[in-house]
Image (cartoon, rainbow, N blue to C red; front, side):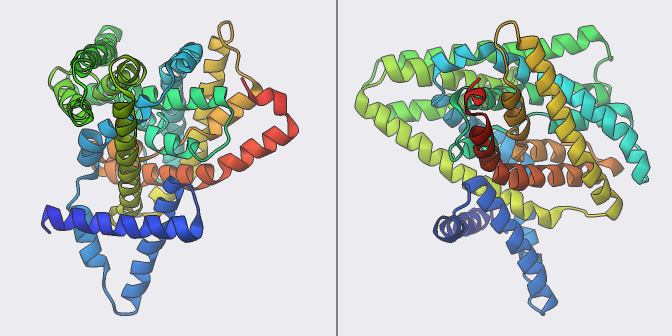
Length: 418
């Protein structure tokens, strides 16, 4: 199927699903798009049982889209920039230590807890994996998804201090999570010797290099923006910053996600304030809000329809059911450890730990990383398990976070601010 036909079909289906959700279901967009897509997939199987085979053309259309490449090399950079653009730097700096610990040490702790847990769980359902491969799964499933998380926060009543922790962590631990994934994948492939020095150098190059590179390109585009007063030119410069900056990051081997988040924070807080007129700010904000909303809808419709390509085996599905609570336990332990380390600088309330644990959604980024796993017998198993965790996270955690906030507010109003 020609790529234009696939994009046209995806846009048409996404627009229809978005209308149905807005008009009838009134669910958060992320949850609504995934749920309607999954129901549609089951509907296609139902039609096939009645003699109308729509599964084959639908599967062909989904197969023609490389989800992992489309997200990690295309959509992700635009959504990260759109999310970072409206983060208030003063609020972010107030929570910087908490966010920094959650987005770095928290990911490492979670990855090791989950990796160790599934290493012992998998033999119970009939297959086993090397520990390093289990750890690789831990690195891809540990980061909270910025796309799903930021979309959900728009419709929830999470207190501002906790909201900033969740949003800031999601933006940054996506970048650090991808870095850890690359590090473990490199070690698994045997490209470098497994040693603390090699791992440290890989992390420094990717993570710290990405932050410095993000500051450099953000400042460079800011200098260009403040020299013109034409919103079309300035929006085009922001697009060049995101797309060109992300591509160049891969060539110089630094973290593209971290670079774009840092550049987005710089443009959002300094470029908008000191380099743009009120008219430009209005048009820039509107443009990136539309980009954010449209790409979110497209992405999560596609996440739902990826179910057509999943190789389902009962032992893999059983493993997925067992792994899902392990992922939540890993998240809880990582948040608790991060809270204890951050305590001298920024105290976490008990309810902040609860909301950070339940509000840390997994999404398309984890699934895209799973699809990027090296070929092998374990790949199908880890893809299905990742998909089950992602669907649980979006549908169950996404649908119940608001109710959890309301319950905590009712019982302990003063305690949820921290």
